[in-house]
Image 1 (cartoon, rainbow, N blue to C red):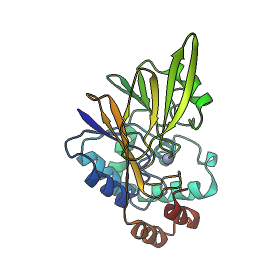
Image 2: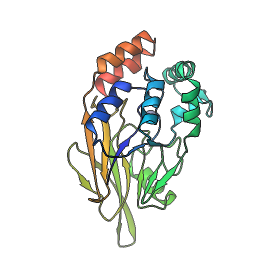
Image 3: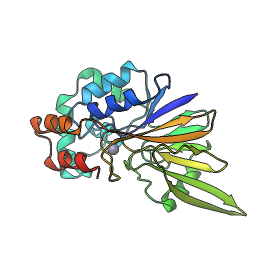
Length: 244
Ligand code: ZN
């Protein structure tokens, strides 16, 4: 059975729709948090996920709009986006975000937003951080988001030593899960930060034991126009063009 793995949609409905159109129609969806924040369509993104019965966990931006974390911990542009999103959210959307768990386990897969050690806040950018995090989940595999960078960290046991390597996930190059334990980041749907402006997501094939990462072009200028109309921060509008 295949699963579609999404993360960090950030209120970008155009990117979300492009990914949903590209993804296998029969594959259940898992979402790794940060549905809202930055983008101009937080309610619409939540409604779309609800209509598809997505299994979803909560991210730091979702918590921020629910006042579960201090917004002062965000940079000024992100603070502005959080406040704007709070003003937009419908009671139904807020209720949905409130209902999301911090962590989920589905068979051999653990799902968290940041890291298994610090599910809301920690960024796993490099192998040393990933290596420490393997002690904080019991399943063979863990999916994370939060950095907006698609990557796979593999833990090998050679003799007594555990070695953690980062592998770049290349588009259209299915990677076998293999024997080692893995931490996998599918990248960001709504605000990629790896220099590629296209929406990023991953397809997990549990039977083939493989993961494939995909990129999808979408109408970035339309999102930017909506963000301008909403008076959202200039920097966050511009960065969508470059994927940084
Ligand atoms: Zn995010």
